[in-house]
Image (cartoon, rainbow, N blue to C red):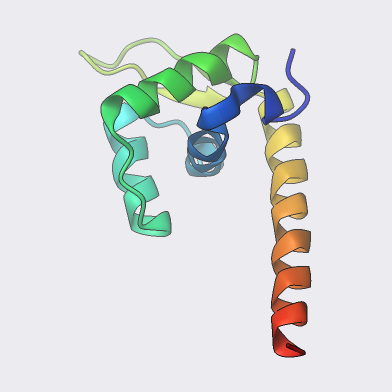
Length: 105
């Protein structure tokens, strides 16, 4: 099981966006895509979105729920919550350091 997003390679950023989208509850792919576009201004192409979803599911960070008509919603697992929180704290620390250094540049 993955303890961080490093093993996801080029899918690390989409993975962080997907996990963040699912933090407020289950969503299917289209809902995640629209949510990510709204909060991050990033448009994930379907291949990128579903490739990252598959890797997150394989890593135990999200679970697929029973399909709702033709759409399959996903939710964060407990492990996913833990990994997301750690990743967000790390990003926050990097952003704070970068911003502080820019202020003195």
